[in-house]
Image (tube, rainbow, N blue to C red; front, side, top):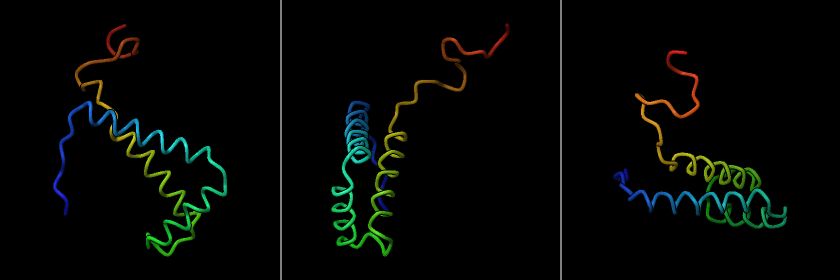
Length: 88
């Protein structure tokens, strides 16, 4: 199993930006490009799934990692501006 890696916040933000850019590009690219990517992933032996399914999984994984890498801007003991928590 791989050991966890700690990233500097700037590194995490850059990685999040890069992954998000690739995800966004894949969501807006042509079917031909996605077909080529699916064939490429199949050739790498990602799984026995259909190439289109592999591309969908890749796009989903990129999106999930983009979310995971977002900085935690709130703590459990604070509320964000404009929130409806606390006394009225």
